[in-house]
Length: 614
Image (tube, rainbow, N blue to C red):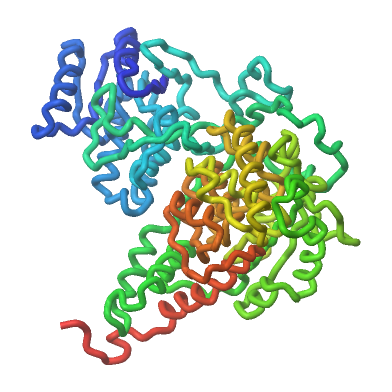
């Protein structure tokens, strides 16, 4: 028997776990992960209360060496309380707060393996951070992501899981359980998981707060100090809210578009395997090499940081030159453009797609200069180029998101799958760096909707001028964004539902593309407001994907800065660009080439016979 007990602050999860352990016939070993702190009287009292209520015959180990305890007690019942405290202690010990948790990834793997292999009874207590507030610090969001991922992985290897809410125990259905009432056929309430962290963000102003993950937070108690997290770690339901939403009846009829078949290539196109971070060890090697190059330490600023990043992504130092940087421009029209939110008509999308293919667009010119190649993927253009631009098209135009869903349930799954397929195609063809570009009249409107919802910002703060709208157009655009945000207010914890309601085939495909690139361990340079909005939901689909991205530039669109801040990404360039197409990211590519050249070609002090720092 392996049981995972989840619950929030003072929910009663520890008491329930203790009652389950006491009911077994085996000896009980209690693993307390708390770190006693005599300067914290309140926490000391909590720990003492837990000790006092344990049966005298139980043995207690106050340690974070959970795999060792499991190996030492194969026939006993082991109760671990709790995993939030264990993770915090390991993050403190490995400086995991500064490396995105990369240093603890092996320990997490070892813990999950030990749990799966334990032959005796096992009860694990862990905080369910997905029901709490959104932390306002990077460390708080990181803790939430990591605990959510850990809970998901443990649920996969445990026989059962329960959620304790207000002292009430709610059994959680196993993967593949029958669909809940009201769900569309073929869309289970809890999809079969293929990875530990297919997660969704808490978005909008509905859940905001200041929960953080302070170093030294403990977990021996029912209520770890850092159990209030983000709902980013909630499982996105495969067909969440798949009943047609308002306006869905008016969606175009399904045609035999080639992209609809991409779902067949994945067991579940919206469930991603775990993201493995770039190599922390190689990153350290690159930092050490920067220290012995013929320059004062840190004197090349961001170039040094980029060199470390690309080395860790490639897993080698010095890094390899980029031989096949690839730009994929995702093209799609948006029904909302018909409501006067753009200065240009929708037919410009196809005309500009032709311009890119012909080599005359800005992204085409910049790509040639940066030693990159460009591909246009028609995801949902209203018109079609004779001969086609790609074989992954989902539909013609996405719905007008202020009054109807952008996509149908089947279309959003297909669009995410199409993005994944495009990433797989490029990586399998030898791409060593990927850039997503956007092309579509009206696409800054859904991008701003997503950014407002995810970051909790107001439209009046983030609505930009897009293609150059006037004041009246700006007011129409802001009203459309507000209407779309209202329509998606019930989908704040589900990135797939958000993509379906208020994004479009192009943004959904970009989200799948960026997430899959991280799964395939391929670095990406993010472009402007539209691509980064898709990245917000890609990070929710595949937590940790952002470690494989850098921001190429900061767009003049105000929503872009909000999205970059949320993802904790600093732009390489500050050129006030707002064209899209991937142009800002491609403009930053030569800087990445330069960062690689510094690490690979610059002489060391020893090589050059130059005296180092005294």
